[in-house]
Structure formats: C-alpha cells, structure tokens
Image (cartoon, rainbow, N blue to C red; front, side, top):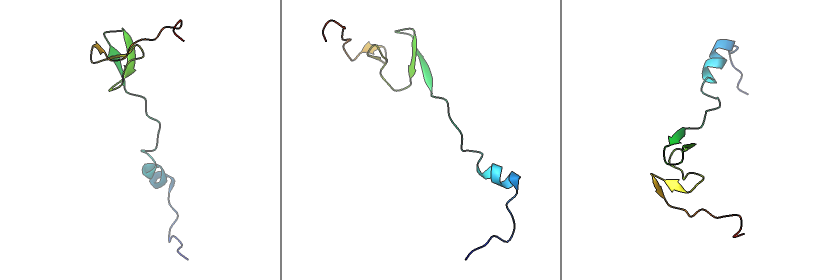
Length: 62
C-alpha cells in the first residue's frame, strides 16, 4: 500500500486547491433593453445582437 513519505503541508495543499472556487457569471449590459444578460445568450425580452429573434408572448395568449 502506498504511503506518503512526508505529510503535505497546509501551504502546498492550499496552493493545489487554489483554483477551486466559485466564479461570477459573465454579465453584459444590453443597450437595446437596458438590462443585463449573459453573454452569447438571448435576452429575456427576445433580443440578440440588437435584433429581435424571439416573439414576446403575452399573458392573455396563454
């Protein structure tokens, strides 16, 4: 059975795990709607790259 010859120090352990963390989502300001959205995603109102690609459904239609 493999056994480490030396104990891993706190510093080495933390250096190894330094990249494991939460990342903030990449939000972009959409000038068409004046809202923030994820980059490379359609906005909640259906706009992408300044033009409307999805129709906005109203609550009456449902």
